[in-house]
Image (cartoon, rainbow, N blue to C red; front, side):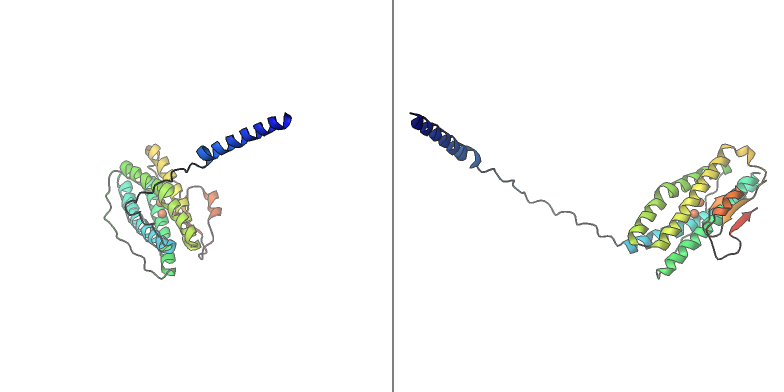
Length: 227
Ligand SMILES: [Fe+2]
Ligand SMILES: [Fe+2]
């Protein structure tokens, strides 16, 4: 009796397994149909060295133009009686000149020739010139140079990384000093204090204690006093 019962149970299990096999596991899942698509976009192949050279040329052009523009802004500030602002624009112009020359050296070390296209600066009132300068410096500090630094690192171009880093640090100082002037313009009339510009990096400060942070250069005088 027990043997017969077990047989029946075994048969039931075998039938159940067969049914599952037939209607479950054995069912073929429809395979995903791959429709032909329009031509896939080709991956962009970038050459990090060429990209860094292009960035250096863009930065060289930007610094060349900023140098010329700030000298014009300095003259305008002097004309309007904002002597301290004029001094600040002259200091920034000197810093941009240093950045320009630093970038040029890296471009030349890569076997290329620095190229720029100097536009005639649009000169407005000193308040408007400060506003324009703050926008330009902020863009370079927050967007342009960080991108260039990242790409130069990818290219393994340490000289470009250093030149871009010096520039972005100085642009941050320029944006800060321009903002101080714009927020307190009436107190920036009389030129009472020198502004210091580091010859190696273009770092710009009104605080003489900060001049100790000027990176070494070939010159005996590391910081220039802009009067
Ligand atoms: Fe600069
Ligand atoms: Fe700047």
